[in-house]
Length: 482
Image (cartoon, rainbow, N blue to C red):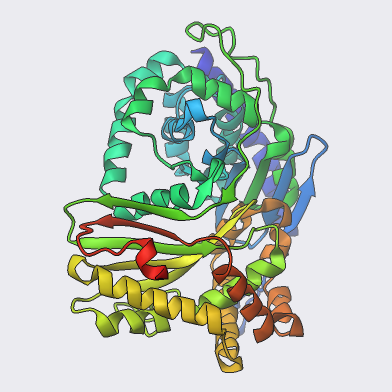
């Protein structure tokens, strides 16, 4: 019963504070205007820009008040797969799969029942650089729902018997991973393209399943889950409310050391491996008649804000896929592939940014008999654009497409929230659409600057080629550069 006591008392305290806050908000809320015939008129609510605050302990708080009836709050931890020690590869997958286990102050049953009672949703997302714990629910349940992020992030218990009893979760997660060639291709791409932390997979192999346990989970958590690596991001909430919630995050890494079942723990005493682009090739032959292929060059780091915007323009020129639902698309890469393919195929470019490196390339899906023709045709068109550059008309069209995409992203609160999660400390600049549109119209983003970046990609290190499917007719990377 001790595990439920904290949550019930916390809910009572939160309920009283929420009632006071609700009364205060009702006093200051704008009154509904009544027009002719007593029909209510729409009241224009003030929209706030994104606020970013850095606390004394190093935590970053970023929020946007968009007057949404739904709140979204997430704790973003800079502890993704790239930080995994070599001997603990896949530990972040365990942290994701077992993210709703018992904590020091609330059991997993209490966590589940309380969130269900509030109608809130909880999920944990694993990326190569971050672990994201998010809760969303009705706006008037903000203080009740968001408080559960504190024990989930700060005080997980990693109870050995819970991890053992729920081990089937890992097996199911791995089976779902094996059924998704897109996820496998993504891991193969990073394994071939990088050396260091970014080469880590977003899954755990069967061999590591047997080696990883609650001990490695605790060791990784105690080393990387520190205040200077955590950001609290929210939409549909008041910024001061989020700052008060962040002040309640406490970190005591020695709490689990004396828990029975942990034994002697070896803490992490080494820095994560730096990531560098190297290029290469990986082929995974399966019985699938649909072949998935990724072809990429070295891209731009997320720290280079100007380079990110320039590469985004180049990405629009290449074509990110169809803009009309159920259509094959009309971008130049798609046209080049469709001209030589006998069966339907799909080609789209991608642009990935990380703290230390980036990837710029093309994703192809085609029939096994068309793989040789499609890959060579797409590579010829891709390298032609990078080598010869683009003209002013292409750049003007790319700028319009990028401006439309930025404006449409700003209209969806879920898209804005996802954008804020990538870099919370500069989320105010990343989501300032007017500023980004203004930068695009300046002379810094001319066709000369885009062409300079394109030639740098082509003349850099060797490209990366990965494929999965029936590879009978799949060319090798040497065949493309011949």
